[in-house]
Image (cartoon, rainbow, N blue to C red; front, side, top):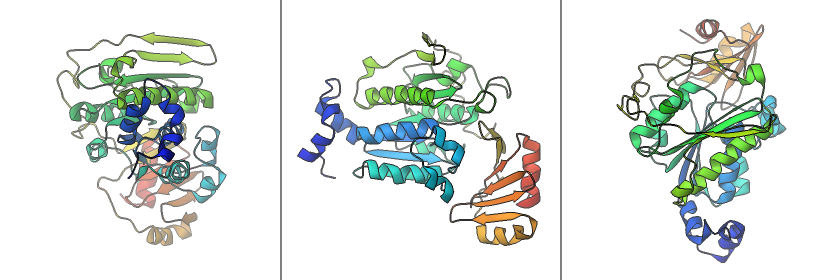
Length: 345
């Protein structure tokens, strides 16, 4: 790609005029590779900002599809995407190509787990966390620490949010910060407390600002503290996170999640009233055959990406790899039972 042109510099002129970035920084951005894991609320804001900033390669990773309830805060999607029941990563890429067609976009419609996370992050300079559960975040933490890839943690619920920048070998990691996977049911979720779009935009904007610093070599400008804020209560504060020499991940380099020792076959999804169920092995389902099997049992629709099956108060969304989202329940045992009943054991 020819990048040193008058047209290109005009496109990024306001960013280049910002002295800490300048032309050299813009060139670094154009050569950079970033993975965004999760294309929901945080991920769509981050992807939008990074595309407009001219980050040359964006890897867009998400396991879910667009629904109307997403539109309140997930800025790259519209009503047509929800009507099409299109995967979020694909819908995001379609929008981003219309924003900046000169960049490269890789779309991965996948669940991030111990079998694929190292491949996902192995060829990028930076990972942005936009996930919706702690198991995936701690898995990403292990993968990034093991492979020496910087990553930026972000989370929000209700009107509050936090960010934390993690550089392997230089900063504490997520396990140092949070101590380990929180117990289920011990904190607020989007289901119990909701979330407002301004806090999403603030969290993702801070993440992107940190990303721009890293990608342009401005490490001294990075925030080495955890940043917390509550927009409704007008609270902003930072917390010093101490390196833990006995941390099992960055200290002792024990990567249990990466080894699959704690892999769960089902995961409750924050804000969805749904449970994701994974098959023991990755499958290659024929959605058309599954549709024919389920037609006598309930309402079924299928497109090239997924199958939706409604029975009673539950909806099963099935992907070709055998993964399924069981909507209408937070009970993982019930979700696995419905999976076994309608899809297979």
